[in-house]
Length: 392
Image 1 (spheres, rainbow, N blue to C red):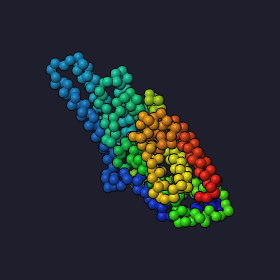
Image 2 (tube, one colour):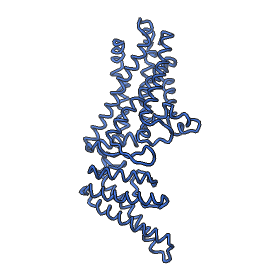
Image 3 (tube, helix red, strand yellow):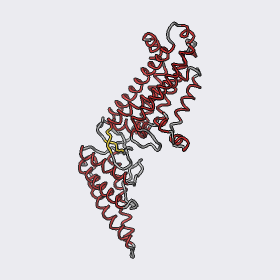
């Protein structure tokens, strides 16, 4: 088995397909970096602009209410509320007006104070229309959970003396850039699809080149040959993916700075309480999940190639399985009852890790268990087929 592993690894290690996979992953992940090349770093100016735009909208509403000569009780109450909000905004805008010289702790404290105010108001009356800060490229969450997340987020930033890096930041530091790429900028299904193309080519190569006939007459266990293919694939694809991630981190770090791995991401397990996940924790969970997903598809392609030796058929079957993980499919009522038992419920690693799936799941570790269970079943089935017919 070791000799077969060495032979197969040597055949495929420097293949053009591996180089293309690496290049494709790097290009996908650097898409935002290329789009921002040549642009000045306007992240802090952009944040100030977001604060000012929200403050201006608030001021306009106050002016409009004050112009009304005969205000109702509810309008007076709303005016008083808006004046209170304006006081918080004045503090935020005044603190942020220093630009790059802004004291990080003072700004975080001002933002935290307003977040706490909005949380109190929303808890008292969820229907109150607050003037929330609208960050460029991000949607507003007016729910109580959204307000709780804001409080948790700014409290963490203040406690750890960290400057806010928004999702739409220009030239975000490497740690933020890499995490945001996997969370918001590059579809999980696109990254997986890149590997599916490579797998379809790898697992059908022997039959296309007719080397399979020689392998079939060798006095070695065909089951071991099958397992060797799985190990070779893992050896090829996992280092390729890690190399691509490391390359993107180095490129963005040299240009944008390295950032901090303890920067927070806020999520909720129960829809009521907010929790913190650092960028380092996200990346560790992401790597663990993407490797499990790749292992599942490696075994699936291994089994598929036993029956359909062409690249196109192999890719279509794996691609069809991948597409069942799209939210539009996995959330269908017909699938909803069994969704969490299907491997496709865990292909969207970004939504799963931060607990933003709109379908039923067993969570992160449960998802890995489901994927590994399906992987084991498919592998046992493939080994059983090869053992019975004694040919690949």
